[in-house]
Image (cartoon, rainbow, N blue to C red):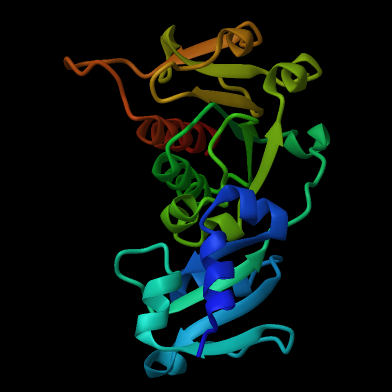
Length: 248
């Protein structure tokens, strides 16, 4: 049985302040948890409902297991309908971004993406298309937000996420910089080469003026109908699909 202090501690991790303070974030659902077990992430504790214990894979000895009742899961879960498993996972220490790691590949750069669902979907999409790295501006939504983690469906365990002051980062960058802009050239006629950064902007404001100055290859997804704009996660999927197509 969970104590009141344990419940209070886990519920505190619903908030960014305490995730940062304790260096832990929440992953829910056995499928997502399995992805983190197989990854380089270090799992602190897995809370599970006894009725679903048989779904757990063989675990390393350093992972704590704690049996809980459904009513307890209801109290600590971030979901309206808990999925029987909740894990506390250590937030990895900030790794410095080495620009050499970005050579000979395309990398998504997110400027001010605010919606956790969009962020999670972009990470999941990048994983689907084989993109290994994503760079986020400092004002983007936190990737360890429970809604973001849930939307990645485990893909966060495989995609490297870096935070950067984008104007400063781009000032030192030597790769081609593509940006999703309404006045750019067609995505289907763009000469992509074999490497570069692909910048996608905020849901409402687009790419910030400071970052736009660093773009040397503006690109647009041609509009055929009457919609005013595309969702940023949908745009990311179209860019990823086109980049994979032209490289192959």
